[in-house]
Amino acid sequence: MLKVYGIPNCNTVKKALDWLKENSVPYEFHDFKKQGVTKALLEAWAKQVGTEALVNKRGTTWRTFAPEQQATAATKAGAIALMMEKPSVIKRPIVENNGTVLALGFDAADYAGKIKG
Image (cartoon, rainbow, N blue to C red; front, side, top):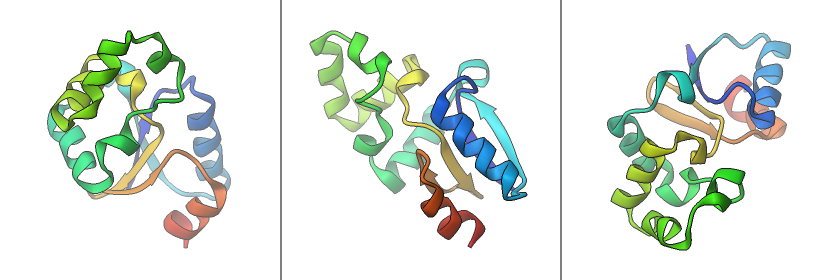
């Protein structure tokens, strides 16, 4: 079964969940804010997609960080520490199946090819 990681009030997450429901794709939702995120999980994702892709540098959370704090994301260890401290800086949603990242963010065409296809 697919596992979708994100924050329920995020518009991109809502779009992704709506798409999954409309396409009858079963999934389990993991709320970063309530359930947290482990270092092991972040490291596994980073190995697959890289920390540059995982850290959402367009979001509100990123913009609230001081330049020094943003600079810590330049290294893998720093980025993982930052994402553990502030899970809302993680790009979302992350859709995985048996530990493999299928999608990061939401794009209907991408989902149609990778998730439903």
